[in-house]
Image (tube, helix red, strand yellow):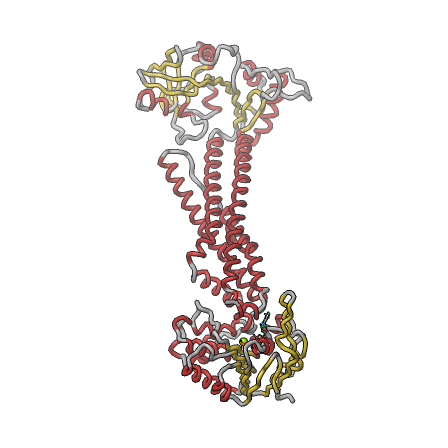
Length: 225
Length: 407
Ligand SMILES: Nc1ncnc2c1ncn2[C@@H]1O[C@H](COP(=O)(O)OP(=O)(O)OP(=O)(O)O)[C@@H](O)[C@H]1O
Ligand SMILES: [Mg+2]
């Protein structure tokens, strides 16, 4: 039981758009084991990103319970959630979300800056991480000087720098061509092996999904059995 | 994040859009520059007024008519005589004078001069030594001699020289006066400088210079020298008592004359500049307000533009307070930089005006006071902070999911 990094029970997320109620999640339950690589698939609008936001503590469910590392995070304050995002979760976005005016090194370093410790070897840690994702010679480049695949590598390095329990990747290969997509996928799988980090990947690409241990399908805000 | 890192990030963020940063701080910059330079000029003006008043001597006392009282009795020569005849303890010398503006001419040259009818004591009381010839003597007063002691500007204008002017005959109105003395140069254009003055015996002036409606005994001012600067107040009390009995003023009646020390004139001048400072302060407040609104405006735009960045920072662990600090520090730095550049610009303007003043030989030396620099800096930072609060708060309260969704 304690091996579950993620345990979600009956998650409901309802958006209120004026008169209209949108039920993005309708009682979704999910368990993910430590070190697992899981793909989430499903049609557009089925609630995949909504689920990822809740799993990533960026958003709170309307109802239901979410245990991250056996800790109920539904009742935590904004600041506590910020700290959980900082220490236990790494995000990889479809559009990379790098700070444009900032070098690759500083982008990777960013999460460490929000860590409330006085470590001063942040630069070295970021450099080592960039080296791991194969960007040793691109450290001082700004995002606009990098290819899409390289930018996504920077984003992955940023997600890993705090040594998180899970990496949440919402369509990480969605903006890349198939070759770069395969490379990124390979990189994520390698990191999973080396660090035993749990990977949850949302994808529309069956080729990507095939390489994971487990695929779940979400339809209308629920896991399809 | 530690505070130093916040400042580093804010600085590089400001640097990354230099033009916008500059335009944002322009309001503050101009406001501060205006305040700094105007205050410097005000200070300079005060300093030169004060120093010209102080150059008259710290033990100087004036009596003049109090025109706030209905039908004031005129000051007369007898008042002056009464004061010196009373053998007052704290009074060193008494110098009555009459004054009128006239045109002095000499072989085709002419100049408008302040002509004073004086007694020999005037030289001591008002400190107007001669560099050539001598001052008015008692016998010249007794004889109503048509003699004159002139300031250097007068000599320069009439004779085109300030050498060997004694003995020349100048014309004042319809009478010719022999120049018997040239005053030492006072320099500058300080107010009341004797350089543009002409002195004649008081009796001569009463008969020939001042307008006919005045009875011949009247004087315009009585200047008095206290025995020493610590006794000025005692001297004022003495003079007041003598003048009250001269003019028959009873205890609770208002005096029809005013006794002022040089010090009180200086105070009056300072109070004028104090009013000026309040006025400048008002302008400063308005310009800083406008500058602050400018900062707020741009910061709001910045927050909207950087919504995604804010979302990302929150996603990787930034707390509300981190985002708040980040934007507050940015607007604070805009205020600070605007303030510093404004101070530099203000200093430049002051220096320029100082140069122009020297060039046109005006006695004005703009002085930037430390307090105005410190105050403008604090104000600029404060404005940056206060007007940054609203935009920074907006940024801090963005929902991370929403922020990440924006394009
Ligand atoms: N902030 C919001 N306000 C209102 N409705 C929302 C909001 N976010 C998501 N939704 C709605 O919730 C539903 C699920 O959205 P979600 O983004 O999770 O879909 P998705 O599975 O990620 O789709 P895609 O594959 O296209 O990315 C959709 O109907 C969407 O319109
Ligand atoms: Mg999605």
